[in-house]
Length: 318
Image (cartoon, rainbow, N blue to C red; front, side, top):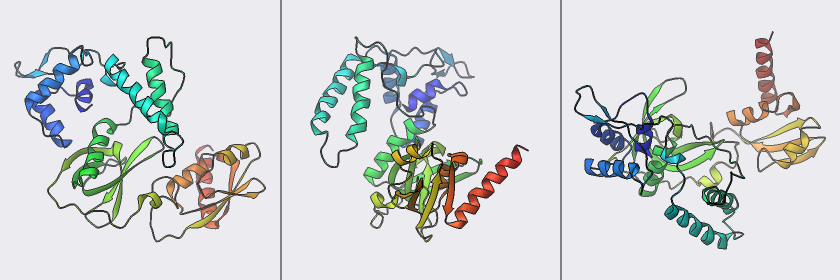
């Protein structure tokens, strides 16, 4: 996947040395022979049959690698017969465990796998299901597997990070947990200050393993860590859990009742819900997404905050 991203680039040309450096920064130390073998496989009929264009660096001698088709990607290639058989076996095996306690996630995974088998079979005409995802987020292909294995192997990482405002940071992180929210992935880990950091994976530039001794997570139960919040931003852990009352318009109420904002949601009558949460940005964003169809009744501090945001928005339209 990392090589595939490099070969799709129309900004930079990658030599073997460049590819070796990219893989090294992503935590994969491999020899040039392995990279050559991977390139051959990507271009072979046994692999993905991708077509490369012949390009050379400024010296006119060093070969560079780029797909001939700027829109090509191994992610868009249909499964081979061998791969399809593997997926069929997976579907068959996992199907035996549906309905078992602790395996509720299979209810979502199984349709995805079955759709994959269907759309790659010879008899299929077109997809019959669409899934909520963002294929254009940066960093998922190359960083998510790296972070997963770093957590599993208990490896301390050095992460180069760029915020949306353009500020660059270099983090030393003891990675603990990966969580998806709103089609984005986030890494949670202990930073050098002894605090839990929350890093959006699509803002990570590079990841490199370090020899810094790993500090294991002996305190936080991440199954409970998010109980009191909407989304992934914990904010100040000293902030109290508050009872938030929100009243909705009649035509919006069935939606909110059938799809709770938070697992603590209670129906208080008069199209009003109560949730017990810590106030954070994700909660405010959720409330604002309902526009004029939602009114915060309590706490007063949150009501005032939402009011000020709406007034500022009105000013932009005057």
